[in-house]
Image (tube, rainbow, N blue to C red):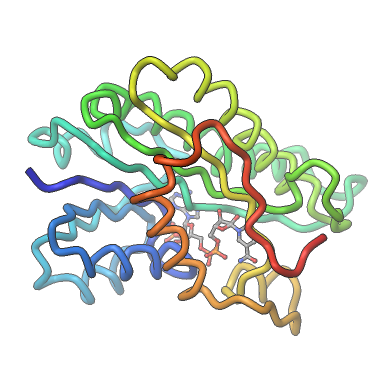
Length: 229
Ligand SMILES: NC(=O)c1ccc[n+]([C@@H]2O[C@H](COP(=O)([O-])OP(=O)(O)OC[C@H]3O[C@@H](n4cnc5c(N)ncnc54)[C@H](OP(=O)(O)O)[C@@H]3O)[C@@H](O)[C@H]2O)c1
């Protein structure tokens, strides 16, 4: 049976490249989730291994996914790559902005993990949470990113507890804390800043880590950065 990998946040940036890299293994069944689906639906409309599903982490999960997952019994990989960033100092950033970051970067992924849990269990899945170096303890911090970084720190810390709870189930979970990568998110937050890593390079790394990293890591928070101290 083909291995099934679910990737959340595939419409652009790193997630789009993760999906592209995973399609090189034609034995994989790939489920691509994001709100904007027109471009990737067009790219993959003739590729039967990719199912593109319109999906919003701020909406209830079941209604959006149940129909697509009715014949999928096992999920072997889940990449929580979707991310949302709001920039501003604590004094002016609204409490709603903190909620929006928490929803996309923490509550939404948790709801997805919980909903998929029986299938993750059946597939002895590797779950990979994509976080940021800002959420890595002791790393350099960037002013204006308190909502984003704190919400990413939540999923980062969740990783350790989940892996401990699930260690006898066969589900493995790791968290990759990324340094800067050249994507729209980075250029929108820091116009003019050029990162040393492309989305394509990082997408390849994350795809490979998802397929093979659970042999070596479980419950680990890993810094993936050649630039951020
Ligand atoms: N780029 C960097 O320098 C950097 C550094 C550290 C960590 N990261 C992390 O790496 C991941 C990918 O970042 P990126 O730079 O590729 O970001 P990006 O270009 O902004 O892409 C983010 C992806 O998340 C999806 N997304 C956002 N809100 C969503 C929602 N409510 N429901 C479902 N999907 C949603 C977006 O799709 P739709 O808008 O179509 O839904 C998009 O596909 C993020 O978790 C980010 O925090 C990035």
